[in-house]
Amino acid sequence: MTRLMVLMTAVLVVATTGCNPKTKVQQSSPQDGWSGDRLQNTTINNAIIAQHTLFPYHFTPNGETLNELGLRDLAVLASHYRRYPGKLNIRRGNTDPAIYVARVRHALASLGDAGVDTNRIATYDGLPGGEGMTSEQVLIIRQRETEQASIPSRQKRQSSKRTGVRS
Image 1 (tube, rainbow, N blue to C red):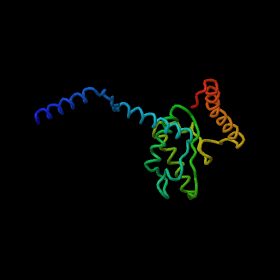
Image 2: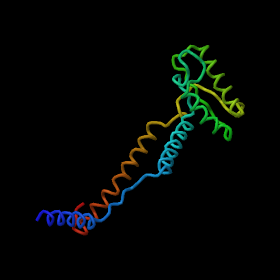
Image 3: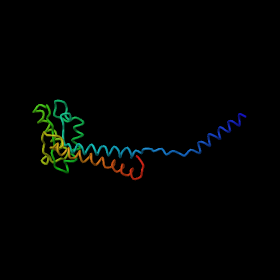
Image 4: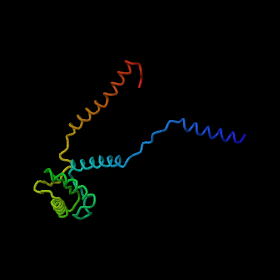
């Protein structure tokens, strides 16, 4: 009797295991991670270029040299400025005027060392990313975004009225 139970249990285990459909396990390949990292880095680099600003926290405290973050951001900007002229915003903040001037010189020298024609670069102390938008422009954009976001909801409601199906 015990042999029969063991045999039936074994058959049952094999039968139930064999009948279950195999579940596909999605494995991420190294390329998937690379693509995500590349997309994220591209997004970050585009933001650095759009902002084109070095803040006091990009420099060593009370010094004119760039820290690790400052070097990274300036390298992104240098890659862009080698091909295109532009403006480099270096925020002064509460920095001593003499240190600020040294920071500007250091940043320009670093760009020159990276192969950038610094005659094509204008430095200033202003708002990140340029002059920005008026509040009226921002309100118009926000209103359009709100209107566009509500369009799919209206379409869903209209189609559910026609079909009698609620979503």
